[in-house]
Length: 117
Image 1 (cartoon, rainbow, N blue to C red):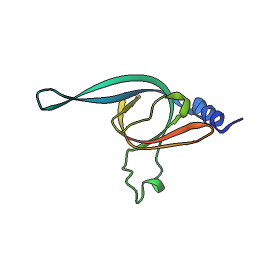
Image 2: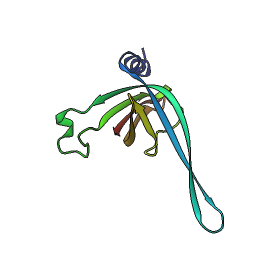
Image 3: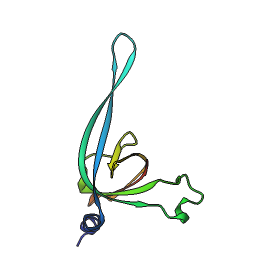
Image 4: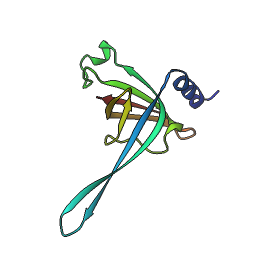
């Protein structure tokens, strides 16, 4: 079993259905002024979400109430952005810190994301 398959199996067993909202902005120059319009695309994906431990909270930029979300690389075909949001159990979180891990052979294996509600 490959590393990617192990990650997918763990998230499949212990994960939750969440709504991932990908937000992309387009800057347009009209009469010399710039305007920004956002395009939102929602995706229903499976992700593992957990609370940070007290040890992880100590001395970091992790705030009380922040959570960690893990997404298998196969779940999304785009790079997560700090503009994006995720909704789980009625709470919408914004992405604070994104750590994508993978290899040249396997591609993206997992996205480990700090989320804040």
